[in-house]
Image (spheres, rainbow, N blue to C red):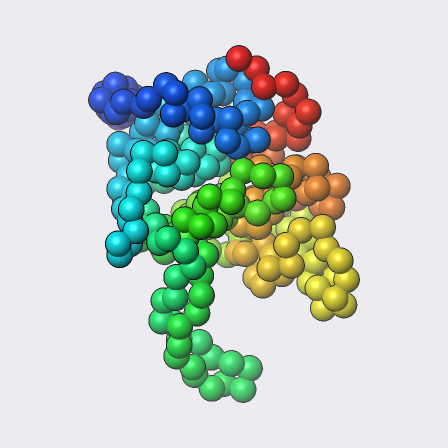
Length: 260
């Protein structure tokens, strides 16, 4: 009964949330990972985006101004992660806050000597447990290329990671997924990347992924959608686990013509 009510509610929200056709087509063409979607996938993404816009507040920080084009760009990038998962994966929080550029929240941290410091640290994005996602528009606007960097995908991957508590690189796996296979793939790749970074060797993915298992999960999620061939070549076992988790195979879309 609850599932039927949820479907009814979603249908009403979709019907009540208009989405300009021209703006939608423009946004889909803007990102290579949406240009390669097949018509049925695009239709599903469009409904997810309308649900996202109906259930989330996307607000500007300070005197920054947002328009429909900017809100839609954020929603599309956020929803590509849950294309085959559902809007329920973003339950429990309601707000996306957008700064015009890098923002500087006050943070407290402890250095290797045990000394506690307080100061402002620059951020491009931030995801809070049971709280908002915070983004820099300047960096959001750079998303959609094939360079493997996407601040929206990064922060919303953190949100998925937090579904079972603090971000630790281990989101709740689906029924049928192997915890052992996930741990083996991610631990081996995280260790390999850490060794390469410490040796100052070139790395196929952003060295920032070596900061922690949580950052590794978010960075490889960026690569999964933005540059799946790079990730599959560097860490094929990680790509396979993400394919199972996101229930998508972006690598199979690479080189496909834009249908429709």
